[in-house]
Image (cartoon, rainbow, N blue to C red; front, top):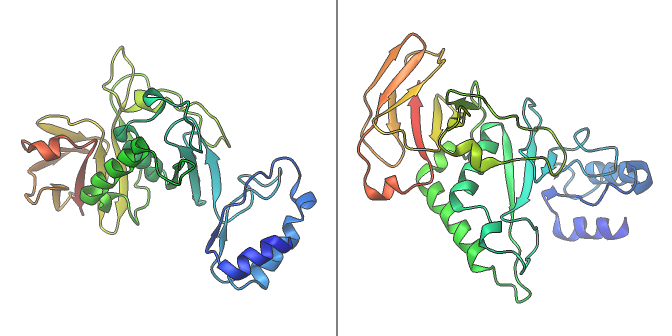
Length: 279
């Protein structure tokens, strides 16, 4: 406990991610005593936020935000939560990992989108080498995510879940194990691939902010995108982020049909596309 207090007093963190709590209960770790000091006496008592890892009895029960690890994350909760994972199978640098062990830039972008659409945050780990350098493949993935966010970040930053998180294609929807603490199955590539063999995949993820909501498309649909089961007022406008021209659309019986433009090469090469609906 003295070391914890010393770190907080000297560095004044706004967020504390506690870990390794599972071997003992919160009482055995003396977590209530420590957190009482943190929230009542520490120099960050008015702003600090902590996770839910303070004892084997605390996950998804206590904490400013709840955490999952190498899972699809959470669903059906309004409590703040965060999914943490590496780009590959390891948190730290692992020289045994090969290219096939890493998620592609497209998968990481859409994993971020999927998590944000359900109200979560993505904590994406990178593992520096012993010399402090970020491995080139990790650097490349970060640049790919950043390039997409430069154009489409409006649909991610400061958003909240829309009326529903996603729209599926026709077919049998896969079962996803939400609300698990760690290592739950998440075959994400199948969720965003083109549907086949009667299996459904995701046609769009949704986020919202202010008077707008966003449909984030993992595949470019061609000439039209059809928003199904829409119960809101007729949108005032629809546009594609990265393009300044408004799009033509029709609203009829709970569906919005949007006419899509021919894309320039730069936009066509994106890992995902965002339609902004202004209401």
